[in-house]
Image (cartoon, rainbow, N blue to C red; front, side, top):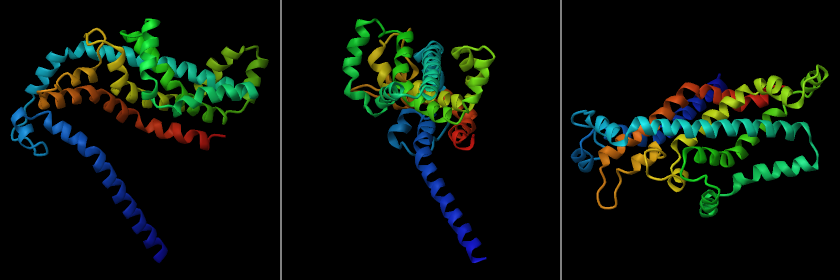
Length: 279
């Protein structure tokens, strides 16, 4: 009985600790939300106070000022291009690396995964110059393609760990039936990768949609290429910052990715643990 009570107390303490950590992370988002419905005067006087009167005029102004619909489409195009390339190339790379294990594939695996350890700031200027030379900067398609290089290492690592749980006998059966390597992968193996694919998609959508630094370097300030996060930054000036509009713009920028994450968060857990329970 004492042991059961001790475990119960430990669980309660653990839950309180988790709730405390959650509050710490959620509080800034809460502040952003309440300040998005305040006037400029209220934000300047007390940023943590609740609004005296909730007003949504900020949203109508910011949506019109940002040209929200156009920038939303920009984000969609960039994110879809980035996700499509990351999923296609990383899943296929993981399949080849796992099924053809030799010193060459181990070396290739090292070159593919190691870039995860290199900070972006160390080569961002070089990247900018290279992208200018090959005409991949200043466009939505070019920006989406650049995310392939940053997202493939981590995605390949995730796919590779899951791929090792899939029996090779499945491939052999497909080969006996006359399927080629690519047919085996796309018709047999890739459907089995659904849990980890959803995990990769959710994590990379959150990253690409809310990224600030790479779009700041690679696209211009035109509505034809600008992203939502960049547009929100326009309300922050060197001498004058419209804080109420800046908070509203940030809410509008990150809200779609938050909703996407909430709807698919259960698949992240499934994808993460699938490799350890699938055999």
